[in-house]
Length: 427
Image 1: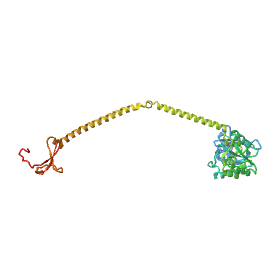
Image 2 (image 1 turned 90 degrees about the vertical axis):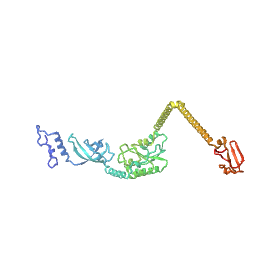
Image 3 (image 1 turned 120 degrees about the horizontal axis):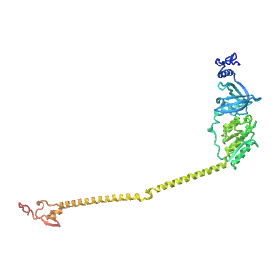
Image 4 (image 1 turned 30 degrees about the vertical axis):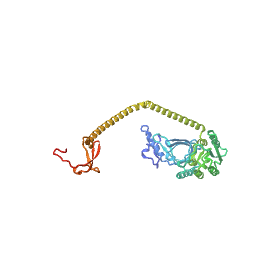
């Protein structure tokens, strides 16, 4: 059996070295064999390789893929950790030619050999893509990508501004799909170069013209996809800042699903394709009619349910005894009122009778004490002029005119002087 001992000068761990002389009666273990291989592989440094991505599988935030030699059939497997993936261009996909910095790795448990990627970029576009990523980070730091600054797309725009290439498939896709969804939609189309040196200035000029048009409610910038090189114009800083400064909402519809220029980040809405832009900007009239019908049906159902509920409540209230026969509530009250009135009348009557008896008693007492009662018994009152009552005979000497009051009236008399009295009292 071949020896797996480390070569002189290599930093292989001592416990990972397999015996030099392996015999059938004393074989080495699989794990020690794999540890030996891993110790040998771990001494290899990183290397830049060029190839074509043939597999790109995203699992758990990490990428597991394969890289094929562009000029042959040789192939390697690689893995790309999520922390590294965040630093790479986000448009890497199957079929791209790339250069990657890889480091070999051997799994002791499974015996699999793979490479870990620490950097990757498109072939020929590496420097440009790196500059774009730096620009992307700068614009993001300025807040141009913040969702809070993005303007809302109108529900039904009166006029849609369209910036696209002349007689392009993108223009046909947008117009055809928009008219299918809402036949009365109006477009104001401005043609511009969608690649090359004229792309940026012409697109900015078209954007400014449509943004200044008060009738345009939303602007769509559309292109039918392409390789990263042809899409570089839509990542130009001048165009990106012009879109950010526009007062009219801007929809980006550049390329296909995997294409991602900087225009997508700064636009108020990103559409994956020109067809998708038409669907997002223009509502579907059939869907809206169905929605209106559905809402009307729901409103009718809710109103019917509410009326039925109120009728049921009213019937329930009407079925209660007090409302079915209101007099049943008044009858006991009327009896109670009659009782209270009778009781009050009795109390008042008894009070009057008691007061009347008291009055009679007081009248009798008053009559008994009245001077008139005394006069009625035969007494008389003599008084002088001025109403002075004669209480002593000396008050009326002989010849004095006095007035005598008796029970039935008064008469005048003249005093004859004091009359002699005997021991038994007056005569």
